[in-house]
Amino acid sequence: MKIIWTVQAVEKLEEFVDFIASDNPKAASRWAKKILNLVEKLEKFPTLGRKVPEINRYEIRELIEGEYRIIYRLETNLISILTIYHSKQILKKQEILREKKS
Image (tube, rainbow, N blue to C red; front, top):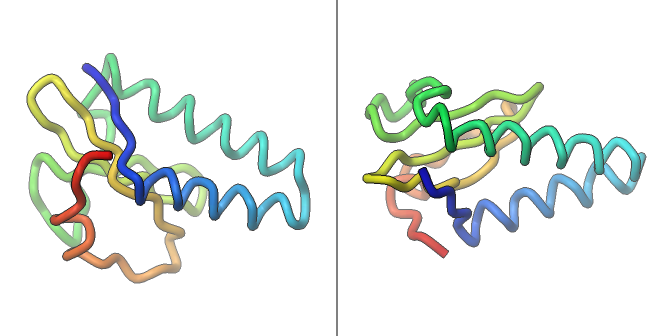
């Protein structure tokens, strides 16, 4: 399975890295590596994540890493990383359902 990141997902990843780095740059680097390694596992295990409860559609799934939700969409031979949310944020369903590939 090929993995692509949407523009929104890349921006959110950078936003969280910058936020964490403002307090602890090494922790930010470790966190980013965890996220990237977890996403990489989807190549072999595309259904590793659970269905996003708020959306309840098979193809919209999420991986959980600590307090962060990595939301992705399963497509034919493709996984689109849609966004990353902090678990305390309110999920904006309409953003996820309309997110296009970068």
